[in-house]
Length: 496
Picture (cartoon, rainbow, N blue to C red):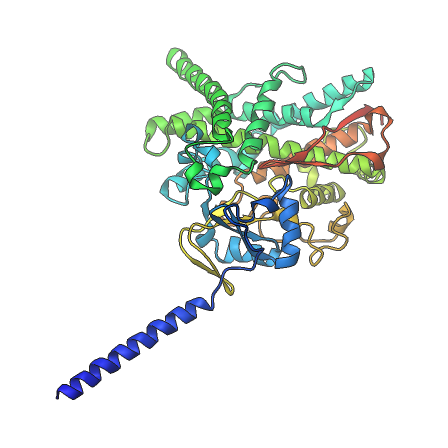
């Protein structure tokens, strides 16, 4: 009996041991994605360079569309193909939906209130619903179309004045002010920049500085021990820049509350809607949420659209034949010299092709907004370890030779009879991301970019300042969380 009991006990132990070994071996067959060997302490930080999107695209050519690197103490997985982007952003969207929070965004506790950085939770869903309902639905966008039309008229009027006086137009600057005033009128019913004067340019610099600081490689992100120390001063700088915008928003909120108290009138804008929701249900949204949403909107809604318009004009000026083809289409369908309205865009296929090609070659956010996994995740034959940062290199995907013919050439005609969409369904072209964390503002961007670009092309001819030839135009990139031109595009308008 003792022998039988010992045999059963021993047999059970052996089976349990073999089962554990099988589990370990099974788990061991799932491994980290391939990647370059890390150096001691710094890992692969030396590979980033000044243009990480380019550096990591080149490394991916060696290690494949899913690769792992060690940035300091942080495992980072980089996705560089449309197939793997679809797996991460659609098929396994829920597992990859949490944000990796840059240390810079601890400034003013922005990440705790921001719809862009909150994890997917009840608060995030509430804020996203409020944002979409009050700004980005088709009905709301249609209702505010007259505001966008007026800002485009202001832009063309300024360029007309420059045309008459032979002055140079800083394309990025005027595009920024157009988008800034469009957004501020939608949110606050007022301009925040005097149209096309030199006043209040600081606001542009503040927003650009925020995007640059958040996009910088930060030791606090790679070595948690340095988070509080802030060796590079990135969080300190971001705190200063955020503070300027928060002060502005506080003033606008207090001004509106005083106006409501004294005159009992209501405006038909986003601030009014947000304050009403906050008053009726403060658990849904408070003033911190409102200010954080405004920070997100001004960052994403001005800088990204501005960079896209500047890159589009740069590519068009580099290839004057593209400008001519666009102007012929505009003259035939709209009439030479007329402003473009949003309803016209669907009848302008070549203009739409130019916008798509610009967003393919120059996605405004080259890595999208970084994600992380909160637990180990199986991705195809690999394991993505808990707390890994996940970057989707849409810049590399847009220049992938396996997806695009002649991907390094700006060729709008490639989209001429193409059904490829930019709304997160076709993963060869996802400038706004995809899945539940797709950029909520893309419906506005897809209305504004072709209207502004088409109006500029249908109102004037353009040439580079200083007699610079098209082939000599500097196309150097400036890396931040958004991807802008390193050197401002300056062009001279002339009559058609």
